[in-house]
Image 1 (cartoon, rainbow, N blue to C red):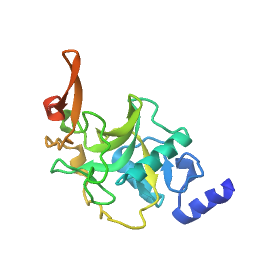
Image 2 (cartoon, rainbow, N blue to C red):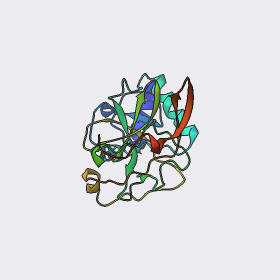
Image 3 (cartoon, rainbow, N blue to C red):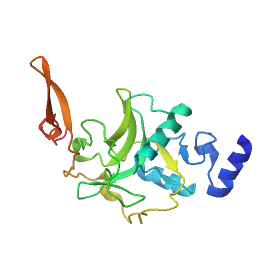
Length: 203
């Protein structure tokens, strides 16, 4: 059965199994290699796939289930997988594959993210921090493994951009999600707005 599924995936989507971890899953594909973001985007497209975008809670649950079932969860805080989200020149993140704004239907940023360190963290990765999987912004030129998915059969479609050079450029605009963070105070806990704790400046 496994061989039949593998052959079907190759025939239908042109996936080269040598580039991806072999699993019976027909939706998600985890790379074996580490590439920068634009190379990862190209690798998915050449395989007939696209970088993973997460718009609904059900998609987050399905992806995390895939990673856990096949023991592909990022090993530590220093490892992660590229996703389809990128910071545009306006400082906001968009899913490159759908053209929709990141966070409109699902917000899964880790606490303090996106931080835009050195004003150059413009690509989204899925990583694990303190036992929780979530989104982090990181330097697009760095090598990361990546997650591809079968192209969405319906819904919004992004047309892609003709030039992604802005991803390597400094951008001081950073739209941070609005959330409240618990902080210890006088034998109790107070909740502060994230903007009062995490200041948008390079580390």
